[in-house]
Length: 526
Image 1 (tube, rainbow, N blue to C red):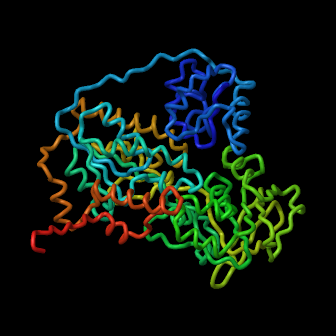
Image 2: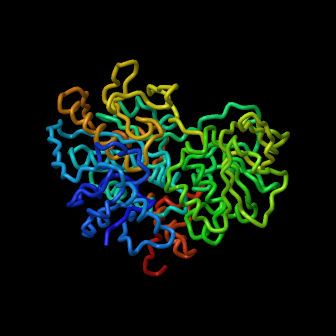
Image 3: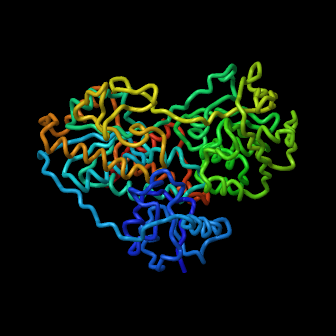
């Protein structure tokens, strides 16, 4: 019985390298790798060895006969990939990267703990002998996996298990609660480390640029995701349900994640790691209808097939797709029937204005040549992301990312020696979790080449040099023991509630939890 790859595929291609018959595609170097929704197993070539399933970091690969009802269609998705497509089954020779000798005692900083940082750290530890100081603005590692992956996709979050092991390596020091640009500057890092890697992602939303965009209830997908995924002290960007309808601009995967959460049964939602504050809000204020606006036609939706399939499989939801040619088939009224759940994909549509006085009341939308006002409680913009600029680092404002050449940060074709970038901050917000693997390897290899060639200015390091600097600055990082305590407390609370974890969602609570507890010493006679 052949195996099949399911929705939670991270596409990092660890499965490809262990397959003895080369039946998993697209593989690295092939068209579609890094952009494909998932990788696919050829059922006619698969020999049922299970090596791919063992290697999968997110538990996305199963024998076809063990697929549950919600995943059974992935057997056909995998098989369909190979119809009318020429795929070579020849095994590619393993490429070994030559190990270059680097100066002894090198120390590097890695800013971020998301997937791109995780792959960069793994590559640094495997290919060099450098010591790595990992810096994150939050005391909860994981980056996009913790703060961006939907709560009802727990398998995808399993990718962090491997990254967490690397964070515990003896050559790694972890400093949480330290923000570059606030607590320390890029120059501070350059003064204390031989090289600095920036894995800061792309979390700043692109704006719609229409009147009324700043009304209460008009928000971005990134703000909504940060709130329901438990980013510390993230405010609730949603207004209480009055009409019961939300309008979302955009039809990408993040937009579909939000729609699915709006319509997920509360009992099921309560078994995820969604932030308690969001769970309480959804219990009190239910959205019964979501209208998604797509600027182009119905055949150009930005979502992947797997995300759309997950939405279609949401129980008890009616899905309607409308464009300019048949928009009369849908009626959007001022009142929403709370007896059912409905999702409307309205293509060929552009938001013109957000209407309301003290909050969002409606969204003016043009579909084809027709303009209509869609009554709504909230407007969520999900039209893309850009990297948040850090003062002191070059930034390409038009592209919304850090300018670089193969990961070497550059400014107007002038390289900034010793500064590197990985992930979405390097290439823009494209590609899923697994795309960061090759991306990070390219950047780390650039660093290795630079260090081996003597292009980096090595610095004499005193033990505790950076620690002393932080202490003088009044910066108190959360260290590995405190981070582990936070994780343990969240998981313990989750076990009591029948959930993966119950997240701590305030910086004060996180730091109090991480703080070492003093033990009272009892003496005889006490």
